[in-house]
Length: 139
Figure 1 (cartoon, rainbow, N blue to C red):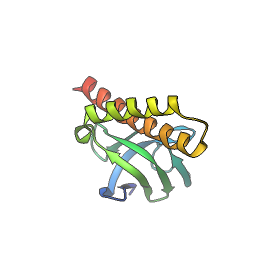
Figure 2 (tube, helix red, strand yellow):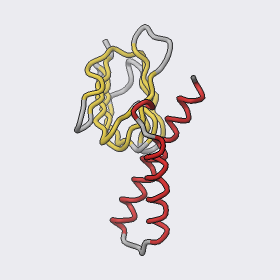
Figure 3 (spheres, rainbow, N blue to C red):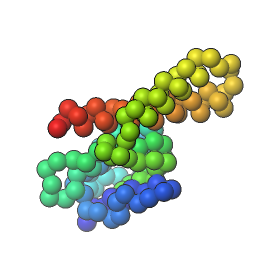
């Protein structure tokens, strides 16, 4: 049995659900993980995580922001800062966060900590908007 668990500091989205596959936004690109995948631990970047439950033909998509994914012989555990379905995302709020963070970055001096903070906010907002747009196209 190959399972998936997705956890954030606020909630458990999935716990030991049997899956066919999961695609995670790894730090160096998308990772498609199937049963029998070699064990690994990777960092995640903001993006879309997709998984397909065992016996289902369609995938479920989530916008995730940063975290870790561990692949072991029994499945995958994702620990993410945030994970949201398209229905949970407020488009207006995500657009405002993207605009506000981009404006703030454009006006900043070269403080590396603040620069990283606002780049991450931009990436998260963009991942959320990408998921909403993707969900809109498939419906």
